[in-house]
Length: 239
Image (cartoon, rainbow, N blue to C red; front, top):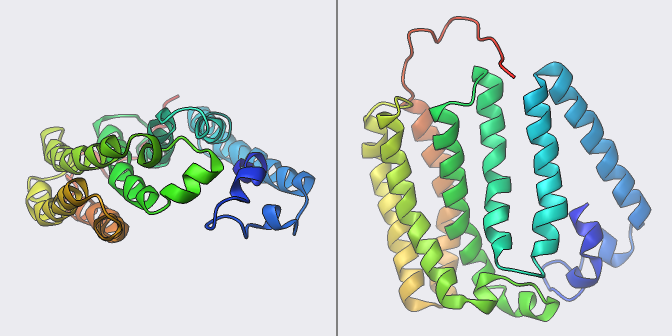
């Protein structure tokens, strides 16, 4: 659905000019039909197979991505923050499905995904500034380059705070912030290099680090999860 709205703009970007819709390999009608045929059964399964709240969150995220984030890319740099919310919702949905409630754990996990996206995407977009500018996208890396680097660094530090918050909220043991500190400090160091140097080399190092940082951080979080007294009891889903 997103690509349907962006065909004329994707054609101007080296990264997206070979997409099937841009190349005319599939028709716009087929693309939209495929998107609807995937979204409707998926939302229905979430509602009937899990609970209505999860289905509503899934539908909301599709709407947020297709109808808010996508058009905002050509209007305002706010699109990056909206896109980060889109990326933070899926783990919240997963937590809700597994535990039956939106509690502290879902907020910590969602917060980690939210903050991680800023060093990840801001570093990626830095190397695509020419493409984004040519296509008329309002990205921080194009219109507010200093802010782009500053926000990336800020959220690198936020990851340290969020991992420290996990044991405070009884989500993990205190081992988690300790053993995750080295990788959080490393991504923060690369975030500082990106902020200071403002070049492609530093942005690429930060981006590549983000690719392994998140799965490793989530693995460490899982390894240090707090054992709860009621963990083995059946969980009732709440709506």
